Length: 262
Image (cartoon, rainbow, N blue to C red; front, top):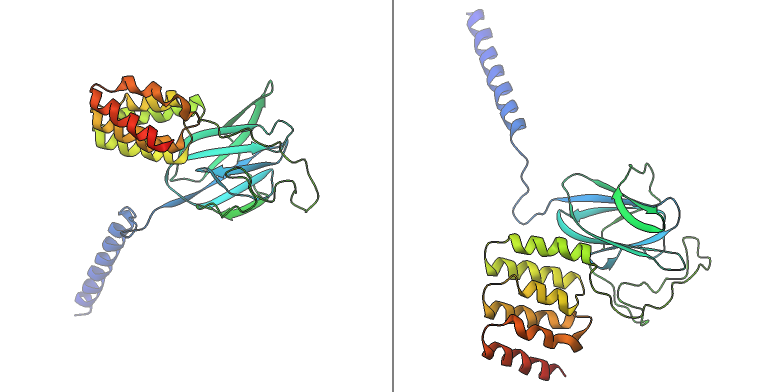
C-alpha cells in the first residue's frame, strides 16, 4: 500500500515538472494593447550633445552619455546635435529593439557618424523616453529647448547659432526610408508608411517626388502630395510634382490645392 502511495505522489510530481517545463518553454506575449519597449544608450567621449528621438528633444541640457528607457520597439529616427561651434548634427533611421542598444558618436577626419558602441556602465543621464514635445512659448526652433545655453550645472555654455530654417531629411536616411516604402506590396501600405516617415521628418520637393513615384495610382500620388505639402522645406518648387501624374485632372487638382495654400 505504501509503495502505491509513493508511486502516486511520484506521478503527481512528474506531471508538475512537465507542466512547468512546458510553460517555461512557451514564448512571452504581451497583453492586447501593450507594446514591447526597450532602451537606447548614446555616448560621445569628446563633447556633450542633445538627443532627439522622432524629432522630440530628450535632454534639455547637453550630456556626454544618455540612456533612454521605455522606447517602443520599431523604426525610430535618431538625431544628435553636438554642442560645438558648428552645432554638428548627425541623424540615423534605425530599428530599435528588442534588445537594449548602445550607440557611440565617432569622428573620422572631422566627419561625424553613429556606430554600435560599448556599454556605458554609468550614463550621465538616465530617463524615460519623451514622446511629445512640450509647448515652446519662447520662439525657439522646433525641438530646441528653452534651456539651450546652459549645461548640467547651470553655468553658461556656448549657445548654438540660430538655425537658418528647417532642413530636409539627409539623403542617406531618406534612401533607407524610400527602400522600405518600395518593399510594401500595395499602394495603401506604401502610402501609410510614407505618411509616417513624413510626419517625423521634413522633406524636399525632390524627395516627395521620389516617394510619389513609388505609387501605382494617380489618386494615391495626389493624396500623398497634398499631405506632404506642410512638411516640405521648399514648397515654392512644388510645381515639379506635376509630371508624376498621368491624368490632367489630377494635375489640375494639385494646382487648385496649391492656390488655396497661398
